[in-house]
Image (cartoon, rainbow, N blue to C red; front, side, top):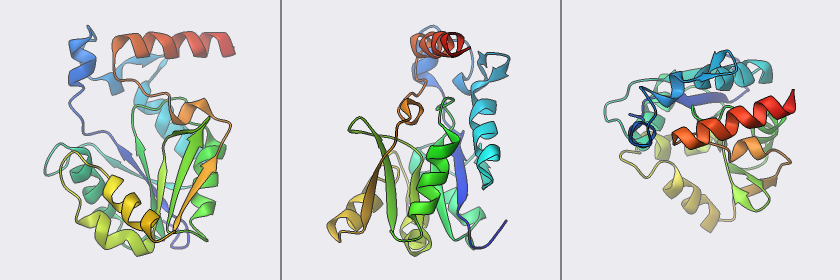
Length: 184
């Protein structure tokens, strides 16, 4: 890991309960999407970004806050962290890089597509202790709010619908399959 670059924490510890309830079989992250799993698409984008990845498939609890804390703990000497749920298979490499670059001058970087907040959300090294203290479902929202109150959050407008295109249901998976087919 390069000490001056942030690490991308890919969250893959969820139970996919909404996906299964919608008729999907097994984990949404292992669903086939154009010859690769959903998670493999996310990991491939991170690899193309040139940043190191920390995959969190298991945490002390199974909620987002627990997973973020586990990922930060495993890479505590990193320059910062980009938190990327494993169910965003269309996230663009340029978006990942833009969030990472924004951490040079900001405590927190939140990408936005057409006014909608997305992922990965970037946190600078100064956020480490707050991220390590996370637990439960809240994820990093409290950390973002804390730094926003201090005027230390940047919202990055990106032309990337992939930052908000997650897969929670079987219908979402089918929609993303159609988007991939149309882009060929």
